[in-house]
Image (tube, rainbow, N blue to C red; front, side, top):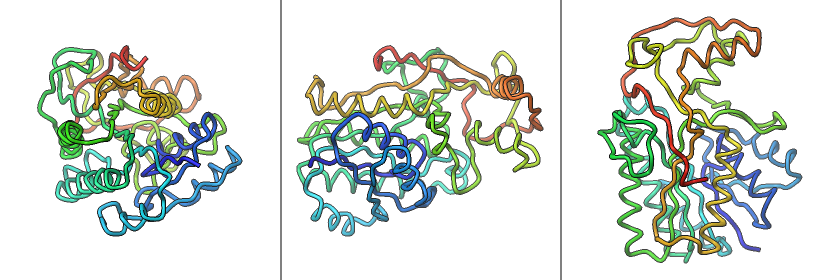
Length: 312
């Protein structure tokens, strides 16, 4: 049976993508996840939702020889979806060396092993953070990139450039997906965004504050040049993100790509401010959220939202 390898398969987007692959294709799915920011419990939840068992291999992708050994015993892989990466903007600002080593070395190793084992299709998890602080919105795939504002964003930009150059000499075909801000959960409610460390993304922070799991949340800045002074982001449902990966997989396997390297924005196309998100949560849930406005956070852009016409 042909297999798809999903790195970071126990993470937020990786697990949802596995669910959608199992629901809509005949592929066997294999996961690699070292549980740095995820849980083995996710595998049981995937089985509960889909009725299918997933095998996860607890491998550090920065260990090339261990990864090579894995590929020696898995010769049915026809595609790789590479999610595995560290992804916190403030954490990357505080520990940039860790981010450059992990995010770039792991990418190089998984591409190298895929090449060595004749894998033809590779989907990379990129980010809208590569656009930097742009002057014109919404952004399209042709929007000129401004300087990145965090080591995390810079690793994604370097990764994109690496793949672009590698694709010119590679037998593989690549799709790069620039996510905006994934939110939400599987309709079952069994899988959603619950990082094992302190969450940095807005929606789980709002939910934890409303549930009393944290005393209050912080809004980083209210003097940005936006309609209410808080940052504006493009929030897109995680199931839509996952379905885009299935579509990308079909796009490559069915050889619909005209280039070796294809790039797509994945967003809703609407910008929502941090304060608007909090106010909407309060209106819908009837629960007040205890928040405090504090100084701006290093690495945050003022506003970013997408034009996802190409992906559609």
